[in-house]
Image (cartoon, rainbow, N blue to C red; front, side, top):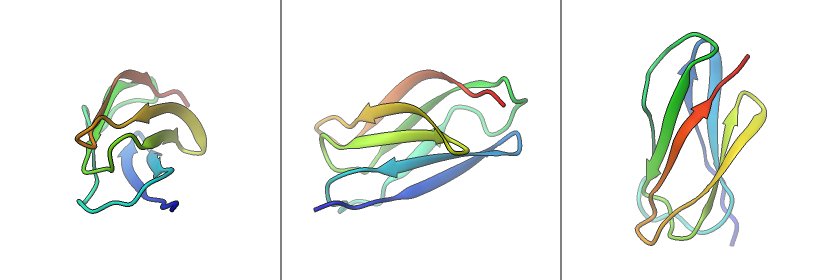
Length: 86
């Protein structure tokens, strides 16, 4: 079964989106950004929880696909510093 989820955070006038590519969610997924706002050259960390185990999560900045994370056995993921550029 394929499900999709889009969650967004506002960074310097642009949007960060996360898409869930597979699996079924039973917990409420959550995405956390290390900073709430910053200039277009801001680097930040992205983490999430409440996703199904071993699920691919795409990280988008506006419409640009920046990173792919795979959740661990508890449905969480953590990406190190992700550069966001205009």
